[in-house]
Length: 429
Image (cartoon, rainbow, N blue to C red):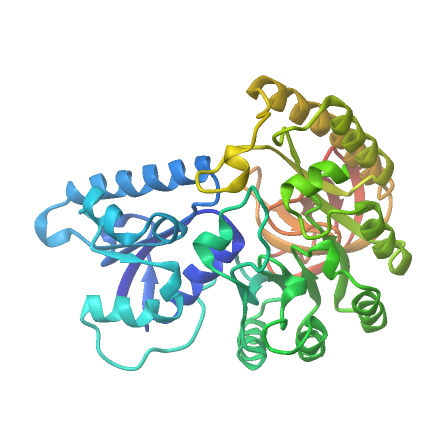
């Protein structure tokens, strides 16, 4: 049995790539120490400079650790993902020769065959996933690359144009995950609403096949471009009902039209229309968004417009990023770059505003009884677990701390909300 040690850096889409690769290598045993492994795999992120730095540091540290092992104990070392996708294999191979195999993003579909060949393992390549998220939920990546050309983003140059994954393959993968006990599927792509545009389809075609699947308790859509949130799609989702979760992750990035135009967003008009459209169909919706501050040319007046927009719309969840110039992007060479201290001050101010909004929104759930999907045991004390209410997505949002009878990973339990915090809930089953 192949013993593997892996690390997946960056987003949930990268994690899916890792899980699919490791699940396609035949019988495997995961280990916690690279010294006990036959195969070490690091899947890297290269989206922004800090992610590149983390990826390089992680690879170099692993190379040093492996080099220190006795000759017969050294595992085969492979590195894949956005780092080689962004910078190419040739230069990386020259800079870090300790890596035995580099896996480019252009070859994701062939990664299992490439690894098995390098490991000299013969036989058919099985189809599967080695889940790393526990028994409660799994990411389902439905597309690769991006069809947009935002001025600040390097993703299209790393991952290429948008390519939808085949509907039947996705349904088969979803069935295997649900049969394995998964309760929630979280659909992810660079733009989930773009699924099918290259196939003559639209997302409804895929959703019609996923929603009725046996065992599916929650279906969540993550990363939805505003232009794709059409009345027809929203009407379809409203009519579908459960297991669809009325949680909408819409990366608006900004609220001022001049900034949106410079960002190159495909909806450089009024983002309020996108928010209003969702709430027209789903008044109860939980909305998550991402905002960027300090983009080149952003004035104080434009930032204040963003603050007003956030205060007015009261998002359940919001991530805030200070703009960073990325090599090779249009925005990196734009004039009027904003000073770093101004960026950080604006980020802090926007997050302070959101902290208060989040705390107030969560207070409304105090005393309510609701279903909590239990994810994992907590390290804080025996019997305490972390889980999520319907308006809490994995990783990016807060959690619900829960204890009581029947609370175990993978279970959905009725619980009373006994305490609310800035981002988290506390519940008793």
